[in-house]
Image (cartoon, rainbow, N blue to C red; front, side, top):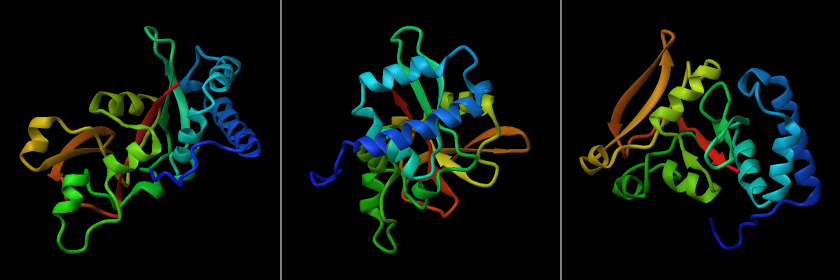
Length: 189
């Protein structure tokens, strides 16, 4: 994120985002049967600086929605819930090191750098599998996930998708990128 990038939404933008999030929340109650929108909205109003990150998730096609409330911290956890890996976050290699290693035809960005700029976290394998319990995601696309240091040190990175009604974890060179591979993120509020 550059210093010229605004990280606050106008009142109108906040209103529109909250309207979109509420509509998605109500439409998908199966994702959060024990939560109420009033409680989520109250938390969002207390941490309005997080609305910018939620808006970035929305703007890039993630369709963020609340999946849980952390019982230890009381934080609501938003995940990207778009059917496929968010369109505005595809064709990315894994991280900055991988991006810099591309001598020919480098992608525009890396998943790690983009997530950091948006103020969100890339899903872990456990979170990705948890997301899949709330719907059917990534049947035509795939999503980078947090890669263990041991794998990354050897030049690799891992990603997931859902095929044949199962979640699969794969590996690739961290510098690789494909039009159908992006990343999913989470945000704690």
